[in-house]
Image 1 (cartoon, rainbow, N blue to C red):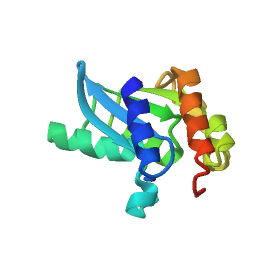
Image 2: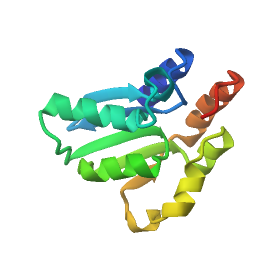
Image 3: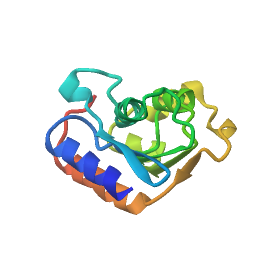
Length: 148
């Protein structure tokens, strides 16, 4: 999670997007590190998880990321959850919750209300290092970022 936080911090300092960093690991090897690039790339799909999934697939030479673990600073939105499921990622550890994402101006709660279903994901999602990620979110908010 520390690497994901560092990735997110790099992204927000460069103005690339929200405080969302992601790392994908398999068998103790880091395959991908990425952060949110929505503003930089002018791409609504350029979330940290999506960017990392693309990198990990390229690193492994496959679309199948079975056996991989994903670490992310914010609980994944539905778009990212679907990408995680399509990629067959085995475990997800996240820092801040969907409610925390809303606290800093992101609309994940709205979409979560539309789509729901997290209760059917079993043990895929596990909260981890929330306090450290909340500090990151506070740092982001103090930068008076562009809301999107």
